Image (tube, rainbow, N blue to C red):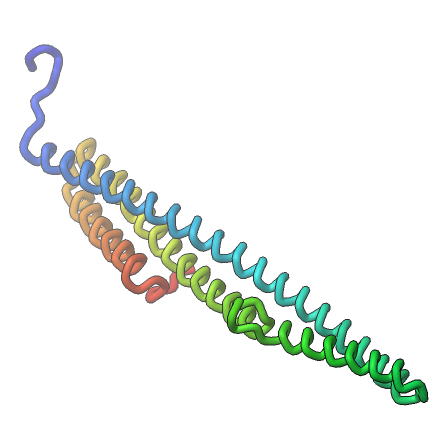
Amino acid sequence: MSGGHAHLDASNKKIALLIAVMALLLALAETAGKSAQTDAINSNVEASNLWAFFQAKTIRMTNVRTAAEDMTITRDVLTDAAAKAAMTRQIEAWQRSAQRWDSEPETQEGRRELSARALAAEKKRDKKYKAYHDFEVASAAFQIGIVLASATVITGAFALAWLAGGLGIVGIGFMALGVLAPGTIHLF
């Protein structure tokens, strides 16, 4: 020993390199996992907002349709032509509004369009949650691999280093799934 530092033999240097690479991959998996989780939460909020808007449109549409039906009954028993004409105009206006609230392709804010947008946001949310879970499994594999590789340095049991390397490969596999095919392997 010189200067109080023990000389690392070649195998310990390799284990240290394995630990460093797995720590780097762990950081990447954690970052990607948090990003996927944030995207999933944002998509969930978007879907909730769109469904709330959908419900508001449904309530408005139901109210004006009910009012139109009620006014139609009232109008049909009247004899005053001017009152009937005014009621007919109002009924037609309510019917147009109800029809517009049901489908409004130009603004994407009709019930049909809101429903499609909400379903798309839910699909994105589900995909991002699956990616998040894949990154979490990758992170766990890297963490356990780092612990096993560290134990190799202390115990000299090189089987632990091989197991750590195997877990690193599993972690890389789950990271790839998180990026390319989230949820392909469903563990939880």
